[in-house]
Length: 229
Image (cartoon, rainbow, N blue to C red; front, side, top):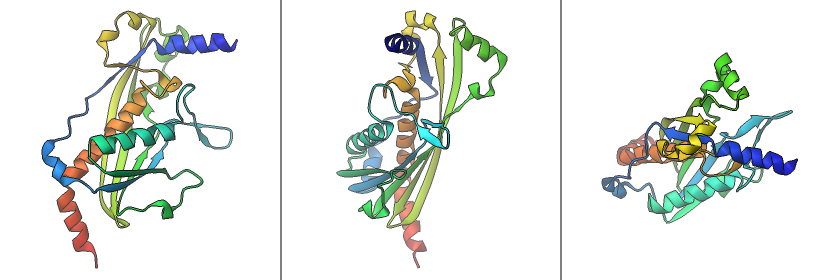
């Protein structure tokens, strides 16, 4: 029975594809001089994969792969080293019971917040229900949007805050197996870390917010310094 269930999940994931509303732009060369700092601490509060449990919301990790907190920590460090040329990147999850503010050792801190993505399927209209009951033989389409907030702190003072909303469309149908080239990527849902449209939206929003912070960094830091009594 266990193997039948796994086979069904794998079959469904092969039928799911997704397109982002827009692609991440290359980091502008002229912003490289606006580096936030050599060493950065990233504090995460990620709720994208939380579901309501018996008493509280709990995070649902992939069936095959790393726990989401470990996966995002790894990805954010790679982004920091390659895209922003940071020399040292520390990543903490503030929901971790072992986390303490004394763990923060750097002057610059990025606080990243993302909640569960919103879906038009939450409306639960009759057409959508019928599509799911027929296993999306009549192609299913789900629109997603995810808001990401990134706050930059310097020596415990808020410098700036940037928000952006990532939008994507998920397509599900066994017919799509024969035309995968029509879509930007596959979407394995919560079976694997990648490819996963929600994690892609999150990491893209994370980078776009930091790009925007870098664009106005000098003026924002100057304003923050002037506000110090």
